[in-house]
Image 1 (cartoon, rainbow, N blue to C red):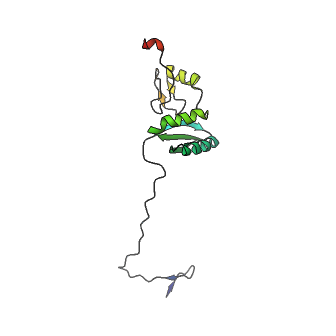
Image 2 (cartoon, rainbow, N blue to C red; image 1 turned 90 degrees about the horizontal axis):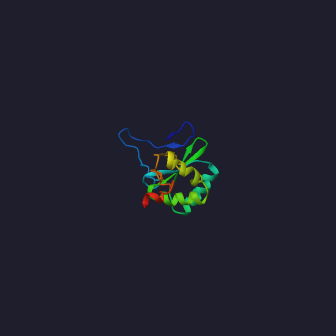
Image 3 (cartoon, rainbow, N blue to C red; image 1 turned 30 degrees about the vertical axis):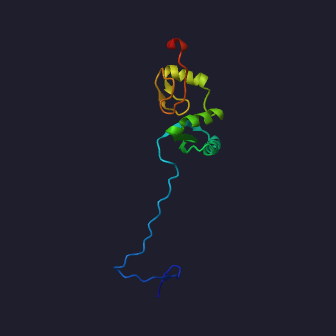
Length: 141
């Protein structure tokens, strides 16, 4: 009988041409459903991100949370962006759009929600769909 020199456990004799038993690892289910994930909030404090994770889970919205320095970046699937923006607005996580959104819509710059670059004159963020301003009524008449 052959024993392990470390612990004394009996070892199985193997012939040189005998292949060891191999049990391939089972494929794990992905943690997040597949899809294109779009950032909807940047620089979110970890306590706020934790609260939002529970709200998104209750709403059935898969959420990707990534470290961004000491804070977090939240991303959702493209089809969930409107529902996610509604939750962020209700929880007052997004900056006041009247001030920030209107300025970004007019002058361009980073989106107040996701940080994506917005072209001057845009009424919504091209990445997350955040409404930045309203079309002037004069233009429609």
